[in-house]
Figure (cartoon, rainbow, N blue to C red):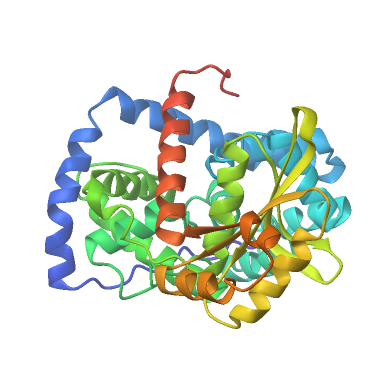
Length: 360
């Protein structure tokens, strides 16, 4: 099998190189800490598992193998019921299609951007953070992780002129450009005296930068798009213990962005419906929510948008039946972001307690 060249580093400006010096100095201090040694062990363990253990399982993949792989991803931490999530992935795509698409991700003879594009096009319920994380473990010298922390770090470092950190879903070409940017950062990190600096090591650096960003900037550093808000709402529901899904046909003619489902005491099965409005027809959104409310299990329908849009939606629903208006709620996107960040922070703290034994 042929070996493709590593991504060629991009040329950084003098201003960008100067802006890197303080974060790099902080990272150098971190490399002398027990936490860094633990991160190195985590890196070794993850790469070993994805490159060898899971790769050997791919030809005869089982649902249990898929659950084990998914549970190891950092991107899966926001989903509390990982078995349910894996079953969603299988139901939405078909097991054979998931297996064949994963096999494509492990084919290192093909360009990284092409593998990313093909998988993202064919498989739903696995977003860019999860897909790029898999690629990073499979090929850490070629691939990096495109997630919220990396995007926030690029913004903080002034490295937003190559790939826009406001983008949640990037293309394969943009992913390859991002990897070239990470290769540039790897060169600078090596100047600290570190050896074997791959793009997974660069991810640790970007995570440190994102964590060091002032708390008051965390909710504004990234402008969320429709798909990102949709995925945040789904993840919030999962962290709260609901069964969640996206793009659901909840009633005749009503396909909604996100649903949360639960069985609550004497109420039986209850469903909460969310529609994200980023422009488009307000009348269409209201009609869709009315159709969704016709489903007997739907207790609440929630419109998600910015202040201006929510005020318009509220105004347009004033003359509608009280039963519908009483079931309608409004959720600002900025509040969705705040809840998502707070819950993820809480989950990270709980995960550090080690209540669930780490896989090795």
